[in-house]
Length: 552
Image (cartoon, rainbow, N blue to C red):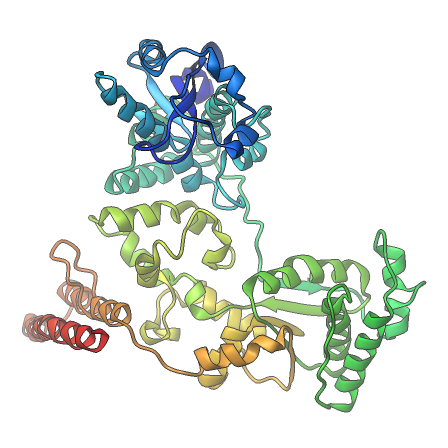
């Protein structure tokens, strides 16, 4: 029996005149009861607002003032809704928003707020679906092939949310073992998630049907960082044979449009490679400049057995080249090549630091919330590049990410026990025999400063969006120091938290304690580590005061 067939809950959704529960009003409430994965009862009602409904809300929801003019008042609808819900588990997509409005208005009308157990399909989908573009309701229902008509209407959204919850529950039990789900539950508890009882229900179901082997996940990461075109070696195609009106592109690209500017640019790039001269090209929108430099680059790299580095200003264009343009060229060009996508080291997770953090018995709610949105992604990633994980907000969880990302100052290189599984070291090996390396300006300049530690030696460089290079150079070839940088450095050396001993000195003391060293040596090292910890703690307020005085 699937877990969805055992679930009994009420899916909630509301439509409002805005985002503030203090200032805005509810104009529609829907509550849909699910049993055994099916809709069995629906409560849906408009609410007559006291003020006007903004035009953009009318456009978004298709709710007109005429529909609301004869609707019942707020208190009457809330009373009926509360009776309908009863003691059931309440499910919502961002349930905190819906219950925030509902409970605020219940209190304002003299009633008690809802205290039912709540499951949030946003939190659950972020934990288990890291490879979707985002986690909006529309995106999630498309991901699971759930129909959604009349989106942004409370009844339709509530039904879709309930079906999404059932789909997620089945997806989790079908693809992840009790061990994995138990670890996710542990992180959810430390993160103080609203949906803890959902994960408890998942584990209860798996325990009751544990006679079969644990599920083997069928989930595969859609992201990669190496493309190999293993076609037999042949004569490299001439530029005209690729870009002309009857060339390779015209035969293999649907709706191909011949562009003379593209041919001229491709020939100029090809000539520059052959004569080993510098070239500056200004190409307007619609010329097709990516193909105009990629085709000659691939052809030259194969002919001369050289490596060509292509640098873009943004990671978005970098990924467009790698996940769209190069796969298309792989299908069309009869040229063997190996292309590698590489970003700055700080974009990749460090296996050692991840293991150290994930095995801690206690984490702050903030760190646990961040790891909850990374755990399943970490199981599947082939690249270790966190930007592929749509569940993880790197800006929001920047401090947590700095604790687990690859850091050249803390890297043990070949001495690290995780060296063979290290994403950064593996990528560097791939770069060694690559034809084309797709990088970005930030990495290009940072690597130049570090004497080509990542990109290695190269003699041929294509700079796309070159007008942005000067601004990037001033940023990445300069130096900056902030309060956050200093604070993170202190925490890396010696964690300031009394509950979490995760700094280098504290981990060193733990490792020494478990080692086979003589007791006298152990005591000596641990004493010295503790002394350095006290020195670090004494230095914190001094550096804080210095930075504050400079900011004033």
